Each structure stands twice: as structure tokens, then as C-alpha cells.
Length: 403
Image (cartoon, rainbow, N blue to C red; front, side, top):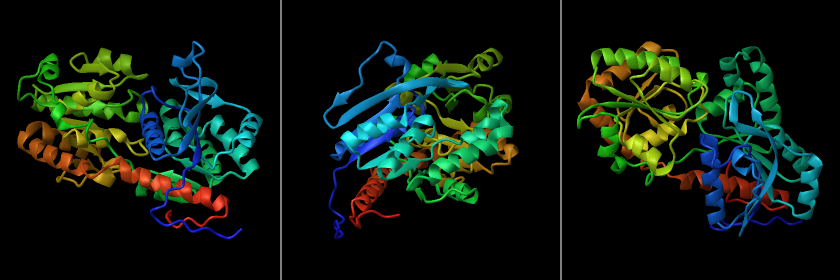
């Protein structure tokens, strides 16, 4: 078949099968990111077949959603150990093969790496459908936080095998690309993340919310947002905040999120304000009503919360990796410590707690940084790759796509 060259301005409408074991309304970075991606691809005229396990909210037998250009295929799911709010999906490869023979997707996009992803990969390979994948979660690193460190090599091997059987794996940072390449992952492409700067905005700062935290006008507030779990390095967060409180006893501490460590953290830190899970404008108001964001995690593939904090105009303290390495310049728009330097992390937090002037300077520059981080560019990169592999599978050379 002669090749067809599509000019850069051309847009090929695709039918994309998106396979994920987490999706809205579940609250986590992967669910939010894939939700944004689906919305954007639909807005650009593509059709989406979303394949996911039934969620707790589907327990009553809710039918799969089917709207113009969007349809769901729901599968059996079972809870992930230590993550009961999330599920692994299960479906027979033959079921997907049969469905895709009737209505073939142009490309399959694997978001998560559970059994559902493997079934979709095998079905797509049998039918000759191109497959791309995302690397969202460091499961091989997580295992050591739950007493399974001895299997981290096996988990890494499992992830490597799945991703290396796809045509392309999207990773969120150059650092992650280099780390995965060093352990044998192939065909890696960096696709950045964006942030909704209308939602996460300093203008959502709420005097009423701050009063509920027992704050005066100038009371400093340190915020953490994320899962309350061992892999988030919350031991260091508590130690760091306790040190800061000795120098700045009026510092207020607000924690947004929940998880397996929630009960113990609440019982041991009754002077902290635990806000629980928050979403949407409510979450954005919690960000904007704080002053500094203290994020000790060393297990992120990206860390969407870092961008949310920057967009909300917070002075961020983090380790120099993932989103912080990509977007924070030390002492310009935030403070970063080397990944092996907990002393520096504590020192940076104490510095902010003791210096309102430094906080104000970093907050202003943080917001300026976020204003250049639109979702549009990230989705341009994803769309070009999807169009490229769909086009190549049909004998087309799509020059609008780049590696």
C-alpha cells in the first residue's frame, strides 16, 4: 500500500481503547490524569472505548456509560492488597478479541499494568493492533514499604516485560526515562504533565477556611496533600514539622488525604488538622489557603500534587526528583533537597516557617511557573504518538508525530 503523508495540521480521528484499573470518581493522580486525557481526546474528535473494572460506586449494577463518542466496557475487579479502594481488573483475552474483531480500535492505550492490561495487550497483539502504555506508578519501589521488598526485582521484571511488549511507553519525566532505561525498559518517550491553572489558583484562598483552622491573618500554614501511606515518607513529614513547631509554635499543619496510616497519624498528632479526602474546588481552596507545601515523598513517578501546589501559589519544599526536579529551581520558585539529604529537607522547611518574606517571594514565582504548564501541550504529545502508531499500522507515514 502506498504511504500517506499527513501534514502537521492534519488531524486523524481515531478510535482509541483506553485500558485502566482506576478512573473517576476514584481519587488518585492516575485517575485524574487519565480522566483529563479522555476528556481532551474526546474534545479533539476521537472516539474512546474505556475498559475498566467495576468500582464500588458501580456495585448496584450500574450500566456502563455510553455517550456520543464514548463508551465503557466494565470488567470484574478485586481489591489491590493494601489499596482496598482500588481494584485490579480481570477479563478473558478472548472476550476482548471478539469485541475488537467486531469493532476494531485504531490503537490500544494501556494506562495500568494489572491483569486487565495484560489481557488487552495479548488481544491487541493477536489482532495486530498497535499498543502504547503509560508508566504511572513505581510498584517495584512500593513493595518495600509493605514488607515485600524481597520481591521488588520480580515486580520490576513483570513491569518491564509488559511495557517492552508495547510499541511505546510514555513516562512523565526525563529522570524517570533514564531510570527505567537503566533497568532494561525500551522505547520510552517523555510526555509531560499539565495543570488546570483555573482550578488551582491563589485566588481561591479562603479566610473562612483559614478561620476553621484557627488561623489569624498572618498565621503560617504548612500543607500536605496525598495518600496517608508508608510509601509517602510521612515519618519524615512529622519529624520535620515537629522541628519547625519548636521554632514557630503558631505554625498550623493541615493534612489532606487518607489511607492506611490515617488512624495512627491522627492519634499521634492531635494538634494537626486532618481534612480527609477533598476534590475539585474544595481541594483547590485547601491548597490556596495554605502558605507552604511540605512534600517528603520519594516514591512518585511524577507527583501531580507538586504542580497543584505550584499553581496554587505555595512555597514548596520537596526532594529533587520527579515533578520537583522538572519544574523547581532551588531558591527561585521553591526549595529542593537531594534525595539522600533529610537534614537539608528539614532545614528548608524550617527556613520557610521562619521567613514570611521568603515564603511570599517563592509563592509568587511558583504561580508564574505553573502558568506555563498547560495540559494542552502534554496532550498534543500524546495525540501525535497515538496518531503515529495508528497510521503506521495502516501503512501511513504520519509525519505530524514525533518520538
